[in-house]
Amino acid sequence: MSSLISRIYEAVRNTEQLPTPVDAGVGSFFYTLGSVGASIWGASGLMLDFIEVPELNAVIGWKARAFSNMKLEVVSKATLKSVDIKNNESIVRVIRNPNYFQSQKELLMQTKIWQEVYGNEYLYFNTPAGTRSYIGLFTLNPQFMDIQCGNQTVPYYVIDKLPENIRYKMTWGGEEKDVTSNILHINNTNMNPD
Image 1 (cartoon, rainbow, N blue to C red):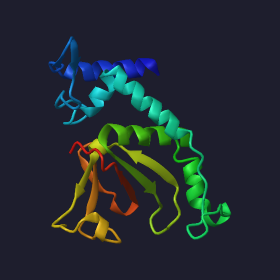
Image 2 (image 1 turned 180 degrees about the vertical axis):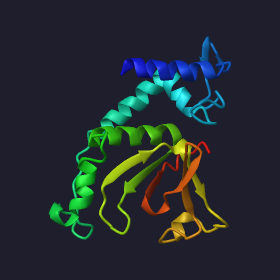
Image 3 (image 1 turned 135 degrees about the vertical axis):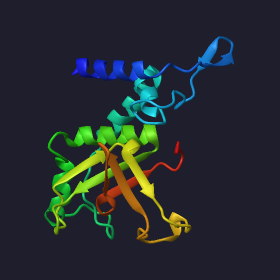
Image 4 (image 1 turned 30 degrees about the vertical axis):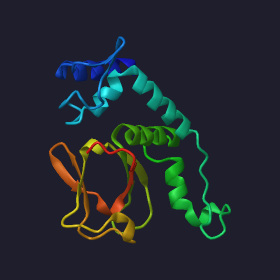
């Protein structure tokens, strides 16, 4: 696995010249996050910064590991007490075993990394056509997501459901897919580089 990470790191490193650090005085220098510019990871350079700045990588990695250690349980909204999981079997099964290549812990770590690096995370619930049963849960890389708002001008906190003109689109390999009906968008309102 480390050879794969090394190859990715070298590919990213060779695509861009590092920016000049800002002199903060007294022998201290710093890089502004996202200052690298366009790279194979997207226009923002945020993922490149996450990979190349060890202090940033260490802090975000520590937060992701702590986040992934949570204990999840189904709780009644009315009573705030644990409920029988048989009534919520589909969602509980998907959270415990989210998809064919990740454990619950890995999925939670990845979602936390996306949230910390990009300020957004997108959870995609895979459902067979015509059913409401979940068969998979995936976290999507925010650099491939595009939110199309149409002429939406009402603030999000005064509406009770997603307006019809808001669409979530994912672009991968030159193809665009509408994922609006199966997406859970979690936005960190304290940071949003876009």
